Image (cartoon, rainbow over all chains, first blue to last red; front, side, top):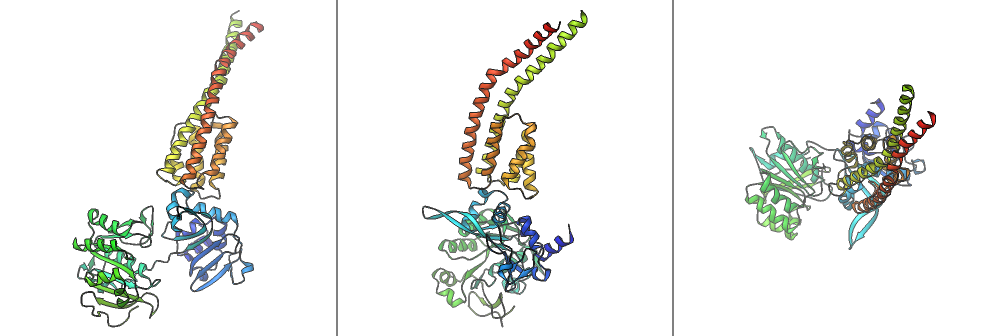
Length: 331
Length: 173
């Protein structure tokens, strides 16, 4: 491998996302200086418009030679051929095999990266049937953060057992990143905690980032993932078949989810889950979450926020007494 | 005299072989069309029922005994697996061209099969189903035509080779 290519790969966090790029775009992007490339979070490819990168709170247009610029007229104009080749590589030459993903508007690629898509929607009976004439791509470079759960683990485990926990947070505060790392640590074990069997119901393929059912993110050696499965049905399947000690799932919010969570808890399985809410008070105003809180099924309630930056652990409550367990916010 | 008989029988033998070669081409063409029909239905079920990715499908299809078809599918799969700048259509067309010497199909079939590559991998399942229906229909037509040609010409070339050889031998002696 050429040194340039190696640098390029390293700068993009060694993600396989860049493998799906057509040769021409790869060549252009490999010209991005390493100090810029290492912060790239998104590569935006839009047909007929300049190639852009976003990251570290900044955005640049990318010139033909790969140098970032703020002048949009200098940016490399993405051609029809670039986008159609990108779509072919992205779907592994098989659009029919990613129909379901197209309906959801994104495709997961090897390495856990995700590519968001936009184009023309085809409707059938008022429902989205598929996406056509795809011409906008948002290639997200995954930057997995292992160790974000370090601060949380002491609050959700006692000796070698896990407590039923729910994490409340507003959007974009790192809920998914956090439970992914919790899954990894419970599964692999940490300090004195011996690894246990973990199952994940990953309805939106965000926790494990599965490709053909194989997790692309680090979710631990004792972890089984039901990918793209509705939460309630998934939890029931796992209880019956995978004998997990803990089930992890994202964003509960429907009545049937609550039923499944209770069923799991009654089978002696621990649950760790999340929900959209900024505080316990706010959660108590949402009928479904309020029901869960009232039943006092969760032993721990964790609140995420951004008082000390994204992903701050603002508070930890005892789920039964609603007393604070955490003295001050942690990051 | 002995020499004459030897020469005559050599002539008859060679022209007989030539005749049967020409005749064989007709049945080989029918055979190849049928094999392509089989391969296309395999391709169809891989795409529509198993939703396998095309590079893997071609790798699988390359495991067949017929040299021409094996070479063809292997070549397409290889081009796609190497993530070269080939689109599916281009990989398909280029591979068909490369394997043509190992196939016994006529220009008509060559074009029908060649054009099929344009639809491959770029549409949804429904789109593929239609394309497969179409190509199978076309190949059935070609098979019928090829079979008619075989019935008409196979015997003729075989007898022509033998009789032509005899006539030539008589003339020369």
